Length: 275
Length: 324
Image 1 (tube, rainbow over the protein chains, first blue to last red):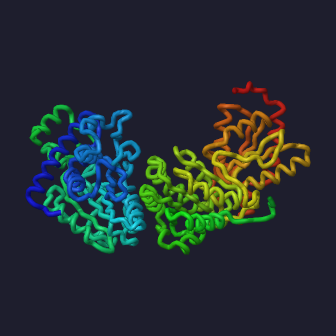
Image 2 (image 1 turned 45 degrees about the vertical axis):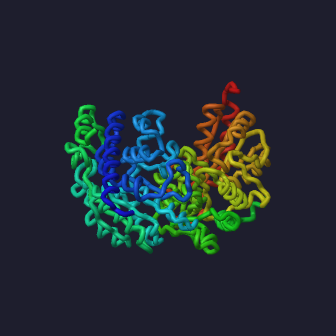
Image 3 (image 1 turned 60 degrees about the vertical axis):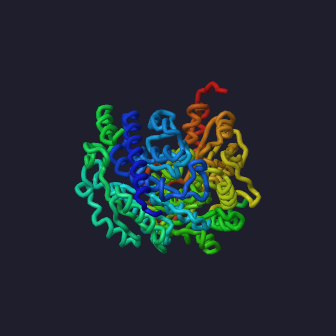
């Protein structure tokens, strides 16, 4: 887990490729969630290409780390990472959301091996992650469970039931990451339904809380590392991100939550990403 | 069978869970602060490491069960029927049924026999809520022995299962050597004049009703439809074709439960006169269980009267060509 410059550069390059895939597949699908996929791209890169123990050739490997994309609409980022890791051919990414595709509009564990859980309805992933963490402990497996939450998502009450339980059961093999991009569908999170103070809330629930720049691997990687050393309580990394990160005209724009780029927007975006 | 003998379905559940837990280390149990009532406490006492109380948080309980199942465990999750199927309905839909997780939802306190706690706790809709879900198996055992068999079945059946139990003890309809087969509705009593199709507590009432009707010269077949989903289509079809009229009886709303399931099926395949005994689209109230059953018309007498009434319709009902 050493954050050597060359490793960081390599991850940055992976993340750039992932962003290119995200934009292309969304445009091909003509629907989907652009902003929240782009904001999550670096987090997903860090997990799939540095932090997580997993085997693309063996998606059911029992000792793999698990990843629950609780903010399931960001699935283009996950599909892109999985394709680049070798879970599926990259050209299959263009089938996103098409009828009978393995790449459903939200993660479907039944259609695509490598998806650890089906999500889409916000607020349910953390509970599932708790269950996985409990199972790993029962089996005495050194498995870690990662779950990616959205900030609008944590308005859902079930998250807080799960947060309470994770702390109660001392799930120190559980690491949640909050994609804190400050926007949701109807506007800025602070204006729609404020979740502040975020860090204080999770700390009061008994979690170890860290805050990082969610687009800076030199902060993300040490935080993920640190989580592994936390004993007796679960960890949350609050990753400050920019919705639409990587495409200047999409950054911090509410409108790009649930729409795909037009072909013209795609070309402009790809140019910015050096594609 | 001895209908005067009363045994608790939830005790049967708790005891069977312990037995299963002894032979299968993958079985885990969850509850939402009701383990004394649901009897998961028995498992908790013997296997504290495999029991997870989630507190008063049913949605998290269901999601946690789903995560355990995804990791190869066989979770049994319990609460009261209205809380487990109502509060956590969407979690059951999204995290259990949609991905077809191997989660067993065993809810106690179904129906009016919840009693004094009143309308907020009396579940009139749990069967409907579970039946509407794809990939869900819905079981309403008629007595403690069938409960034990159903729980054993659930442990080895791959996929989501919902089992509905009761606060009250049920009259014994079977023996310990009874069998349970998913989707098979045993015929408990032969008859050719009408069929009473019921589940749960109403099975014993149906058997009593059948006895009374026999003395009036009426042959009432009684079918224990303990699997509401998938329905025993063969047995129900036979009932319609051979006896011509149906009475359904359940401790549940007449909307969406056993009666609806039977009616939906028969309307397409073999429409016959049918009447549903059940709670008529209203909430429960506080009272002693026996009083509530009386007040809401879930009695042996109500089944008998419904049978008499529907036989009148049978004589004048036009013959419908059978479909093969």
